Image (cartoon, rainbow, N blue to C red; front, side, top):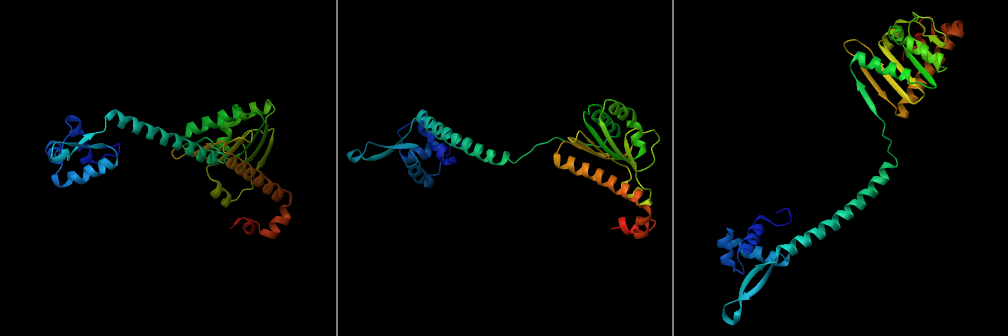
Length: 260
């Protein structure tokens, strides 16, 4: 049936393989196909070149009988058709894939919900860094990563950091402490972001019981996170350097600036 035979056609062909030539009544008896269906099936099978008509005993030898096309020829025919279709399919699919893959960039993306695994992944990124590290987060996580960051700094990796609360360790590289407001703590609670060598990024929400983190080398995410860290540093520098002007315009709590 997978070779385009119907159920009745399959039964008729198998019956003719067992014994042929046969007439319609004989085929019905041997195959189990209802007599009312046999002749219409036989006609279609002749048209599909599954069976052939022969003429046997009868007046002027005109009695219609049927014999199967040798199964070897059927197999050869279907094999040829299948290979031809397969070749066409492979060619067309290859063309489709070329058109789509040219615009497809596949980057790994790992999601982690285990606190220790996410920490270890960040430490590994820092240890393997070659050129630069940009990060922002809270001192709780920063302190855990401190020794690895110092080691990276000592091998001349550029480090730029932004902390949402004062650091508990001495920092020798470019670091900014975020201005302190309740809304800042609310918005950035548990947050930690890191970009390594402008090629890999980790975006994390840290909690011992409910950690959510994503690590990827997708350049869209890398650049977005990198610009996010840089722009937060820009704003904090401006607020620090232009404190009087800033609070005069936006209020002591900077609500005119940050509440949106």
